Picture 1 (cartoon, rainbow, N blue to C red):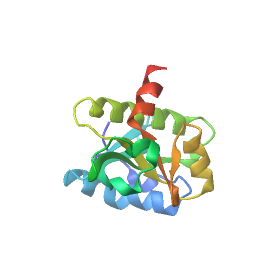
Picture 2 (tube, one colour; picture 1 turned 45 degrees about the vertical axis):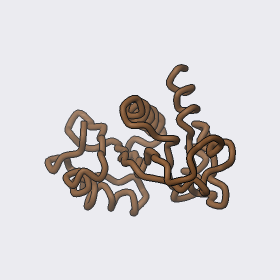
Picture 3 (cartoon, one colour; picture 1 turned 90 degrees about the vertical axis):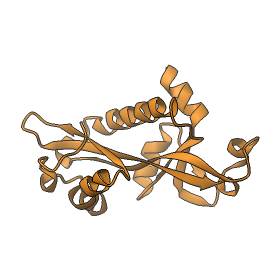
Length: 161
């Protein structure tokens, strides 16, 4: 379900102030402007247990690693962006982050059947987040160790498992 004004966003606390602030103050506004889509996982009493935000963007051909840019046109290329993902602290340790990431990647894969993109990109806030995404085969973008990507080809492989 997409985030709505009626959802209790202020009660959400994943332990990371930047992520909490995004959900509380910007998720609905960006969704209303059609800049991103935020999907929420709700508890039985409509609290937000977790969420993720997807958007689209572009990356310059020259910023891609050689294995991804080989054969690509030399211009800005379309990408899917996993902009935000968070799990409320009350639900840490229950693998909700894995479930939310899996669903976000399914959403990207489905969208990729209609709107082409070369990879899913994300920016990590810290080393712990980076390790989490690397378990899902995300790789560092050369020269930017906290920007990770998952090629559409690898996404396709993950979706077939």
